[in-house]
Image (cartoon, rainbow, N blue to C red; front, side):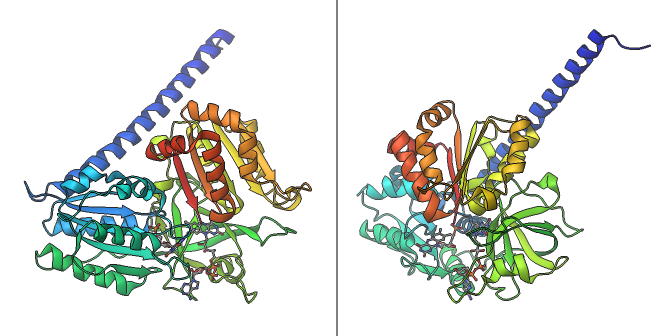
Length: 458
Ligand SMILES: Cc1cc2nc3c(=O)[nH]c(=O)nc-3n(C[C@H](O)[C@H](O)[C@H](O)COP(=O)(O)OP(=O)(O)OC[C@H]3O[C@@H](n4cnc5c(N)ncnc54)[C@H](O)[C@@H]3O)c2cc1C
Ligand SMILES: Cc1cc2nc3c(=O)[nH]c(=O)nc-3n(C[C@H](O)[C@H](O)[C@H](O)COP(=O)(O)O)c2cc1C
């Protein structure tokens, strides 16, 4: 017996409806799990001592290191019996500060001495408030890197503001230069002092494992820029490698195991491998950068690469999974955007708009084939490639954004979220200025508050 044409159509429609229902159920289940996890974390931290005012642990963090230390700090204090309230600095307002008697701040610095994105509103609002803080005792760990002129600029500004308001430090500000372990030891020591609850349980150390360098492809032969490589790393057989689009891989290299380097992951867990896009850095003396040189040239195929996956909550899709997505980036910034596009394509979600900048199409058009495929398959609705050197006058992503002001306003009105990935100075600062001009500074602030403007810039 053969099915009639109508029967086949009905069957196909039924299969489609079933597939759609299964996808909705998977999304609902995943969001429910995320909400439950957040509730459990909050409840676990606040219930320790009934009636006690919780100790505030607030973090200002761009790529998650300060956040990771804050989470570990909160976990340890909670295990030691403290009631803890853990949150990003932007979630702390003048009223919460007025109610708080004890606080720990863990703050990194970005840009040129600026706060990370999740502390920008705290700087603009809470720190503009001159209410007295004499009821507050606090400790502060500032993260930074001495290679920047404004070492720990934001941590220092926060400390000065707290002191000026009359808040009383438990101890002198601790400054951590590029992850230096001595600063962490000093911080742990201070935690045992302020919690006055005996010995602290052991601090959980980040766990690295050995991945295999499985593939490496030179993406931009003949480029006027430094070479970019697509790299594939296979997880250890014993490890269930799980990450979300937007996360980071931290790589330890033999020449400098004390200072791991961050790379944006360009693939999703379903790919089975971590993909990276690595540009060979060139040092002042002409030698290749230590980590990028090792990954792109020094390590032979099959070599063991010491790596750990790092949650990058500021750049994950999370609640934005089902909103329209505007992805903006340049160069190796494609990595973070590609992981989101792959996640959206796998879930069949849209609409998506990519604005991507490189130098010359002839040599740096490494993402065009994949992007054309997504366009043809309806996984991507708009793609703008901006090649700065393909015309007499230099033209960048931020210029294209200004030219697309009208459609951008429309996407934002429809609830779109912005994800920016790539160079901090050359691109992200220009994009930020263009957004302020197109949408207005207040609208950009609102997008930050709503978690609709996310950045992975370096
Ligand atoms: C969030 C984030 C995401 C990133 N994503 C990508 C990406 O997707 N692709 C990409 O190509 N790059 C990415 N980078 C840049 C990357 O992490 C490296 O900085 C880059 O590859 C250059 O590193 P290198 O070791 O090759 O260069 P090097 O010049 O050897 O080192 C770069 C930096 O490492 C530190 N350093 C080097 N040597 C020492 C030392 N002896 N002691 C102390 N510190 C030292 C310094 O801060 C130095 O500026 C990202 C950076 C960040 C922060
Ligand atoms: C683009 C960029 C700009 C930075 N600017 C500064 C700076 O001005 N001063 C400083 O001390 N550290 C600076 N840093 C270093 C960070 O503060 C440091 O890496 C910190 O550990 C990051 O913590 P996070 O992951 O919590 O954001 C910068 C890092 C990057 C990638």
